[in-house]
Image (cartoon, rainbow, N blue to C red; front, top):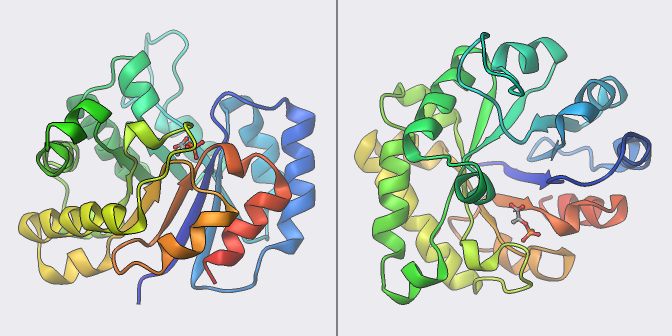
Length: 251
Ligand code: PEP
């Protein structure tokens, strides 16, 4: 059975004291259940403190982006070596906001996914269609291309360890959630693409999250779907109580 993975994406929110307070409020309240993984993906300046505060707890810490090179003349960037050195375990790659505002492409996503594995970080790879693409019936083809290009060249065991987040862009931060059946249909398609790229066994192992206006009120129904193994959550992950409820839904 695949475990459920609930990951918060704080985006560019909070200051250090608020991040620390969140960790203090959440770490000892998360369910002690190996079938659910709780991750908080925070801005870079909070990562050292969050890693320290969550040590020995069930809360894992992730970054929201990284460069694909180990080091060098890339002013303003953060490398996988730096994240690993801090004790970070996950990294979000190719979030639609990075694709839209920071020129991320399937090619840079692919380089970053390889770099993450080369440094022992688990990538949470985001894919998903725009409203225009959905209305033009391109959802399946678009997500398929993003998966094929984003995961190109990975070993099968690395594909198995990748977390894929299906996030329809029109549902992110808008309050509009895909219906659980629609979300599941795309997640099942993604699993099928993974199967074609690797094998049935690997496809059964890979964790596929849904993301897009997930909150405590709608997560239960999403998680009952056959191919949805968790959620990547923006707005509703900012408050400790709401995040805790989302994680509890995964138990
Ligand atoms: C996200 O940031 O990936 C996201 C899905 O945001 P929200 O939950 O706010 O829609």
